[in-house]
Image 1: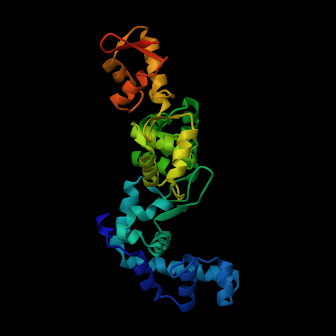
Image 2 (image 1 turned 60 degrees about the vertical axis):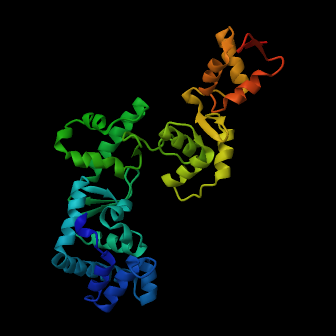
Image 3 (image 1 turned 135 degrees about the vertical axis):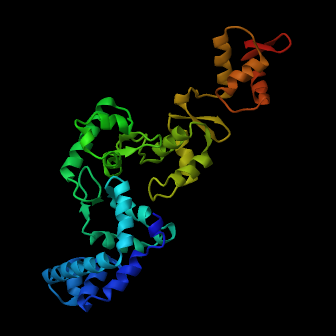
Amino acid sequence: MKQTLKFSPRAIILKELKNLKTKEAQVVEKRFGINGPAMTLAGIGRDLKLSRERVRQIEKEALRKLSEFIATKYEEVIHSIIEEFDQSGGVVPKADAARRILSEQVNRSEEEKKALELFIKILPEMELIERHNEIDDSWAYTKIDQNEMIKILNSWVDLLSKNKKPSKIEVLIKSLPNSSKYKMSFLVSLPKVSRKIIETYKGEIALSEWSEFNPKTVRDKIYYVLKKNQNPMHFTDIARVIGQEEFDSKKVIVATVHNELIADSRFVLIGRGIYALVEWGYKKGTVKEIIREILKKANSAMELHDIYSEVLKQRMVRKNTVLINLQTQGEFKKIGHNKYILA
């Protein structure tokens, strides 16, 4: 949003609080954490020696006044925010609003984020959709029926559960009766506020309970990273990428990642510290066991370079490593100039 790159909601709120009565400003500051942690109505009442109900009345009046002040003085900022919501389909996850609206520098401040939440709350065009079994806390532009949103999302959850695989958003939208009555941008935005479905790294829609696309454990995070990368990776790189993905706030410990790679049958060591997915066709076992399986399958003598080529499909090793293993007594036998068979 070009218009809001220098937008500081906290600066605006602090400025307009000066136009309120002292107790009104105090209640707003404490209630929304403008200058410290947010407090409950009861907590504010104890601080100001007021009843909980009186604090609620003061808050209501203060927000009404703030809404009027901001509506008349900051039309350009309000227009930019509404434009962003409109382009996002009219509904945005509450947790995602700051990233969408504030500049990167301003978004680093928790105080700015809390002030933005208050700024949006007092805009008459905006409505807060509270957390539900199906929907996260979200901001909605204009009146969007929450029950209608839930109905749509539940129909998509049922379809994904039935198909047991991710789907393109276009397919889900096509499955809706009378889908043309909704704005396309609105339908496309719904997965972002859902608690039961997510958008995958491939741009498809999946159930959030599917660990392959929404991992919670270290093992599942490893699987996710390898699956997304589609290539074998060193365990230190896997740990680094897990941290970059920011699945959660848990610290990534390289040793833990390595231990889980060893313990989980979905992963196979194919080189020094390099792991791949078994489902890619890699088999477990030593280089010697891989060579034995190759020669057994060939059922005839093979040239060294052909054996090496086959081993490389399973392991990332040097040619000399293959040669050393072929010299194992009682396992393999060299015939001719450079051919080998099973002993």
